[in-house]
Image 1 (spheres, rainbow, N blue to C red):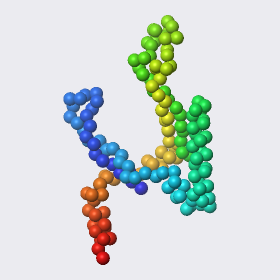
Image 2: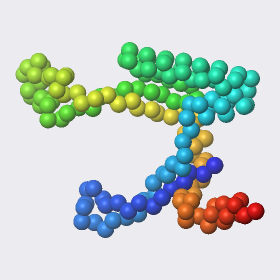
Image 3: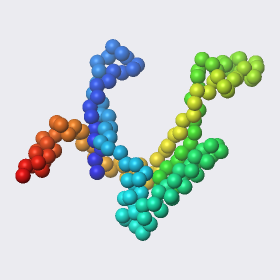
Image 4: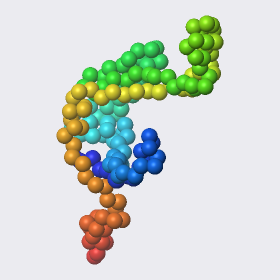
Length: 155
């Protein structure tokens, strides 16, 4: 298993005049959906794909219910889900204003939205840490892929 990456040139946001540097950025090459994961699980064990989907849907419903009720949701060996709040800084009172009159804080104008934060469990971090990095080469630039396609087309 390897993590694909591309090289991206970026400026230092703290020093715009500094010379730009190249950084590695993870590149996804495809995606797994709940259906593809359920299919893979059903091939490895007794439950069929539909049974796996029912379990995954149930877990999702419980994660959502827990978060909506203000809980931190821990899925052992996977990770932790929690909520944070984004604020509109300009709408928030200063410390002095708030201490003088706490009613100056208006949640409607201060809160911009809610974010879900996922923190991976140690087991997940450890499993991913061993992944190697490999430069991403788009299919049209990858000679071995184009050669294989040409070979498939030949009679």
